[in-house]
Each structure stands twice: as structure tokens, then as C-alpha cells.
Image 1 (tube, rainbow, N blue to C red):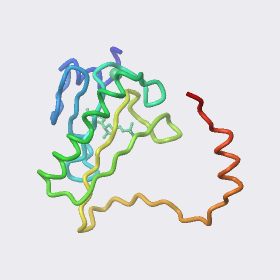
Image 2 (image 1 turned 180 degrees about the horizontal axis):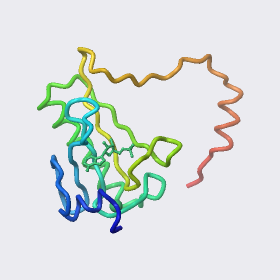
Image 3 (image 1 turned 120 degrees about the horizontal axis):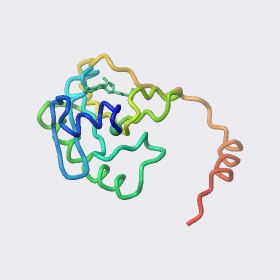
Length: 137
Ligand code: AMP
Ligand code: ZN
């Protein structure tokens, strides 16, 4: 995709601070550094987002994410890692080339808050959704 900024990074047309690279996968530092070491892991081939990623590329990416996450944790002394993907505008996607954010987390207040509300479980609703969402083999 000629107008895709991440395809341009893959092609070497614009610079990136690379962390990992192989034939199918590239990881580089996010320019905004939400936490220190904030890294993006992308497929070299252009896919819009998680929703159209193919199986082979998913395997290539997810087989490398633990390696990259552990490198960030070990070298930066992080206490944990968040893995985040935004797919489509409703989810906050701004660059439409699939990417996974790896966010190193630090015990001493790194300024990032990702919280889930703790609601009372509705088991009837969970059962209904489970039926709706069944995927056969
Ligand atoms: P998202 O909102 O999930 O689409 O995230 C896009 C991310 O790409 C943002 O966190 C940006 O800071 C990052 N970004 C945009 N352009 C570049 C670039 N040239 N190099 C590194 N990161 C970038
Ligand atoms: Zn692209």
C-alpha cells in the first residue's frame, strides 16, 4: 500500500527504531512512547487490522510476541506488559496497517490506566451470548 506509513517503514522509506525483524515480522518503538519501551509489532505484509489478518501471518506474529515482550521486560526492568490491538476507528485505530502494542508496565506509577469495571455477573446473559457466539470446528 503506497500511502501506508507502516508499509513505508517496512520498505525502509521512512526511519524506525527497530527492535526485532525477520522475514514476516517487524517490531519498532512507537513514536509516542506511552510507557518507556512502548513497541509496535507488525506484519511486513499489509493487512488493515486484526479482523483481516490471515492464519499464517497471525502465527508468525504471535510466535514472536512473547520473545519481544520478554526482551522489553528484561532489558527495561519492567514489572509487566500489556498487549493491545485497536481494530477499526470505534476501537481507536488510527494507522490502518495491523499492529500490536506492547506496553511495558512499571510498579512505580507509569501513568497508564487500563481498567475494567467490576460488574455483578449476569449468568443468563452470559449463557445467551455463549449460544450466539458458538464457533464450530
Ligand atoms: P493505533 O491508535 O492503535 O492505530 O496506533 C497507532 C500508533 O502508531 C500510535 O501509537 C502512533 O504513535 C504510532 N505511530 C504513528 N506513526 C509512527 C511512526 N512513524 N513510527 C512509529 N510509530 C508511529
Ligand atoms: Zn501497510
